[in-house]
Image 1: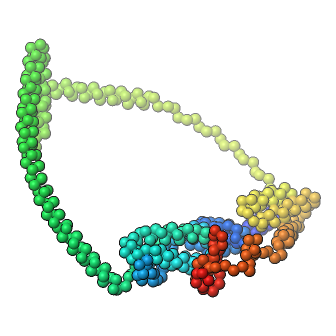
Image 2: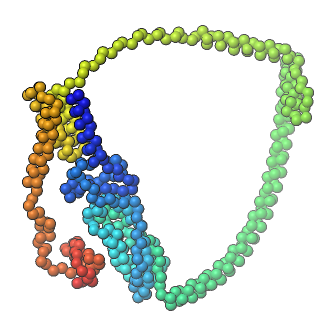
Image 3: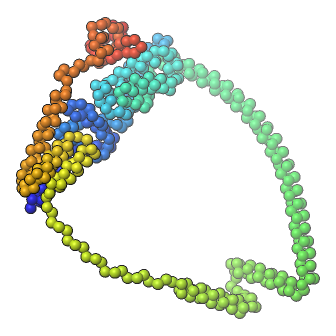
Length: 451
């Protein structure tokens, strides 16, 4: 009865821990895990186990390819033409932890970065160049924005400029220019086409006449050669037949006559109008040969039957298995449970199994000292020691934490109170200042570059 209570209690504790710690991450997403408010690890799609009541889910990041529609904006080109540019960006989160903790609003950051770089790239190009080199614009924007978003754990896959809309007067002028250019090109192409057509027609007639003459000559040569080869073959066959008849006499004559007879039978049998079939004179000899083949097959079948093996010997009777002794709790059962819990602690990093292992070891030590302890007392010792070890370890970890950690490093504290000039405008509360060979992110109200 005591063993049953122990097993039931152990199963209940294990089920509670499993249901509290098992998490299922869907395909296409990653979860960040925080322990006491601090990031510890990232969960990929699948089944995972976290430490119950200690680990919490921080952010659920979408790892699929995302589409970001960049709003249209007016841009001044190099030749002072005002155009409206509309674009779209495709990006994918590569590192969920960096995308969750390195930037506050990922969509807004990528949008503002794309708008700024579109103005910069289009401002260095003339209108005709911008309209004809859209792929170059896309590649330049992709390289710049991908490099800027790399510290955020984001990979920018593509940036496409959807539309470049110049003013109406420029569109009308471009239409007239395009029409004149196309009419000029059509006239040139039409004249060149007439000339090429005449040349190709004359060349084709010439080649056709040459090939026709060569074909007639080659055909005549091939016909003469075929007739010559046929005559030589017939003469050689006639000579061979004459020599065979002269040397072997009746046997050679019978062979040739039999061959012709078989060929005639084959033609008659393959004809669709044949209704009567002729057997050779020696049909009885053929039937005798077939009967001899049948006797050989029977003899081979009998040989295989005699070569079969003997049946396997029968198995002996099975031995009886002795009954196992009854279950009885001893001190080393508790120590074995402690070892299993330590293995779980090493496989699933946390502190829960460590507390339970300490309690199991203490219960086993109590059984070793006093072997007549009841199961209820053993369970009480196990519970008290587990809870006490958990409380003691938590107080010890709190004592190790610093009182007031500084939020700035040594270099950041040295820059407090100084004045800097904005390298990029502050949009949406964020901008950049030039500092040495790099730039730092600053926050504040929206301001223009150079302030």
